[in-house]
Length: 173
Image 1 (cartoon, rainbow, N blue to C red):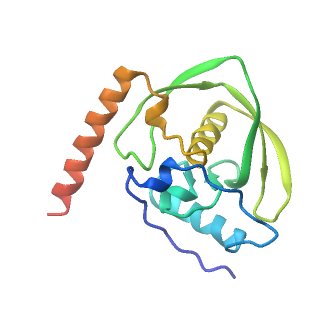
Image 2 (image 1 turned 30 degrees about the vertical axis):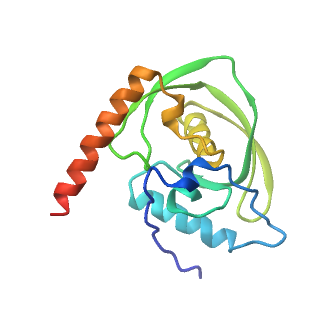
């Protein structure tokens, strides 16, 4: 039986969030991929997220987890095709707590990733699943969602972030 644990989220300005992560090596795994996936899922749910990448908890592995039916883990994901249709919807991020701003993304994506058991698969995602996949994929590429915002939305996001940070500091007193 795999023992699970909840990781702490790292600060939004940590260097690892700005770096493209190397491929997870299934031939010589740096950690058990099944255990890693389980721990990331538990951490995501603990923090009330719908997606979480390994670098958001300080781990240098090219993997993220996301809710679905059922929830799943994506190791070494790739976006192989995107729709021409672009949709703008509010997004939040566990690394930027308290921030919700509109982000434009393709409505549909075709993706390829490896499951924790080492099997590679190709899937087409639409709607919220496509959006979450793209958001988490950005984390692995070292792109945070502030870079995808319209400048006016970025100013709003930074104000929300400051307000939430003050709130957290007051809660710790």
